[in-house]
Image (tube, helix red, strand yellow):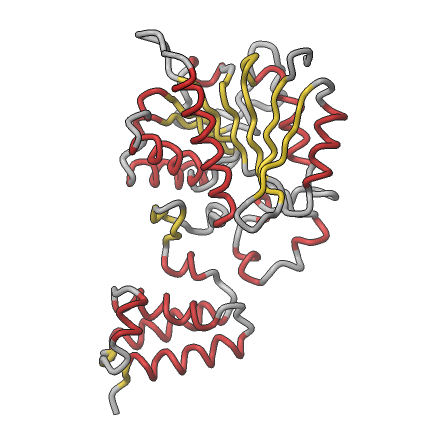
Length: 322
């Protein structure tokens, strides 16, 4: 008896539900669509369509990987983010939908700067830093969004990460989406050291960013740094265990890495610069308090995501701030 789309999905959903998948229906559809190379809507429209033996074997293999907890995005090899299909694997964190709030805020900030007053002819591009770039999702989505508006030539992004493997993935995604011309990459702990800062253990980069990009200061600093409390990392869904722990673990209160970046902002940001930092949905009050303690005289406004949860901290000097 031949296998149909409907029977393959029913069996896959039952297996994934039994294994503890949080979204067995969606997972089964995505995996079957992957092996058949069709969209989920096609599966739903043609439940009686046959599934060949080779495709069914590939589907069974994919189901077994998902049953073991591996994220669907790693099995498929890509993740949809801000309208893009980005390559993902165990080298970096899988982009989350809530991070799109950070991209939207960055796009709005850049367009405000570009349209509020005329740019002088020959003015250098606005310097933007994407700290802890991972897969490159934020930087690539931002350049792509600005390109649609004819404004991508007005910025240059420095994408940094402490992991050379993550940087390789970001480069691959940048090239794949034809935005590598607006990006530079640097292996660094948060940001490359400047002349005003000491770097105790400088890490050489295989493709270091040009001095102009690495030195800053930046008009915009973007970051989706680890913000999960250490004691909560092991309570996350099993799929998270396949992702780099260093991209999740934010220390005892979830803000340890973010605080280290706060300490760098006075030298990293231009006088009128803005930092946009992603935070956890329960960290709105904590980030405001951290900025008040670490950056006296600076302002911090928390922007919500589409679910209404605190998601992006907008940080800048005030008129009297340091």
